[in-house]
Length: 295
Image (tube, rainbow, N blue to C red; front, side, top):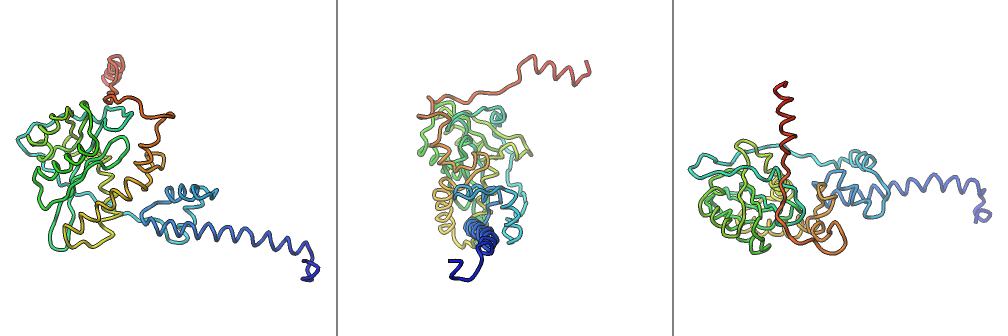
């Protein structure tokens, strides 16, 4: 072929060595653009995992550089709005979730409420997540902040998961979660109540993280007009995207459904047990107390 084309073999191989890396780079860049545009709010770490799953031997640094050059890095708005009213007459419960060591599903559920602005009104969304797999197990939407809203999400969670006694339910100190109706429903299934301390939203961080994802990747990306439209699209996002395909860095870049299907050992999950508590031993507490007092 070189003789017919009138070129030397050295020139042919030199040209091939120059073009091959460029073609590979263009193929990688094209794949990154396709994934980044298909998952608008994925950062370079999740995009890297998807590239590796497609067979590209690429690291996070290169993916980040290419996404930066193509202006594909996600820009996130940071804003916190306090919506919890903890000034009520109901009893509050200590934070048990911070001490739990989870080893299976249905050991810890976390719950929260957020608001959504429609074209002509505000509506509210209540969610319940499994603290082990981050899976949304129940949710509800309605126009007011009555206790019936989180109760609907709780009933859906109970129907979907059928938890055993010993489940820990963690939420903030809002009146809806501390109300007699809500607490009695938890007690009826043998669940234990746990609540974040006042002014510490990070103590319910798993649920706060989901709400941020829900707003950034679904609600803020659309202009909703009616509650029915919002409810329909939230159902699709939770069931078809978040639970099934969205990657979670805390789960080893698996979706909640994939994480629940993959036990630590071959076979199935071990027999269910309540989550254990990780508390300092008396000796450790004594040492820390002595160090703090200078004794």
